[in-house]
Amino acid sequence: MNDKLLIFDFDGTLVDSLPLWQKVDEIFFNKRRGINYSSEDIDFRPMSIEEAAIEAKNFYGIKDSIESIMNEWIEIVDGLYLTENILRIGAKELILRAKEKSYKLAVGTNNTIRLVDGFLEKEGIRKYFDLILTANDVENSKPAPDIFLGIADKLKVEPKNSIVIEDSLSGTTAGKAANMFTYTIKEDESLEHKDEILKITDKYINSLKEVELF
Image 1: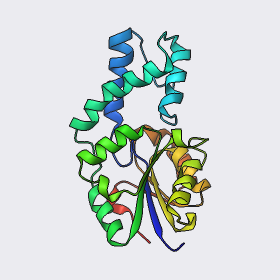
Image 2: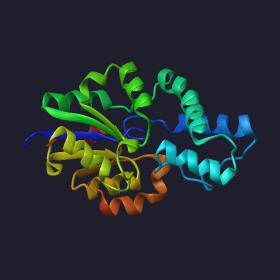
Image 3: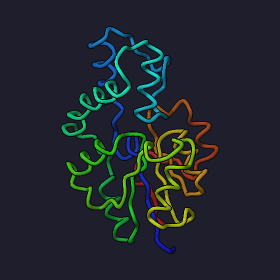
């Protein structure tokens, strides 16, 4: 297996989606339920959408079912992903560079395949990706390496020949645990963990334009 692989995390890495999820929280918690949500109560960032729904239901005593909460979040965010211009600067150029070098491309995310697939189609870049794998497809979500190792296994690429681009501490930890070269891109929500990230990441970057391919 001499192929090369480039894996993007989605939220915060391939897309600058933090403002969108803040809007979702405002609509779901504050406007529709009168709940004063704070990230200090629950940090949804390292969770899959199902894990986040369970935490929200239990912490705030929401009567809706887990499935209903997830569907409502997806309904709110669907339109935002398909209308807002949130693709990271340099993303398309990096994708094209990788394809020119015969890289296989994948997304490994805690988001849903429906949202990721729809967004990539909207941006005209879905055709470049060989695989989208979500936290719901593996046993353990980040910081466990399952999602990245699962991608490498399905695409038949050695982890040592793989590059991961992440923005969070949990994602960076997962990339390194998978024995993959790991970039961590600056993202405001992760700045509180920057010192910890710098201890483990292979390279900390401010832009996708700084990514160097093997």
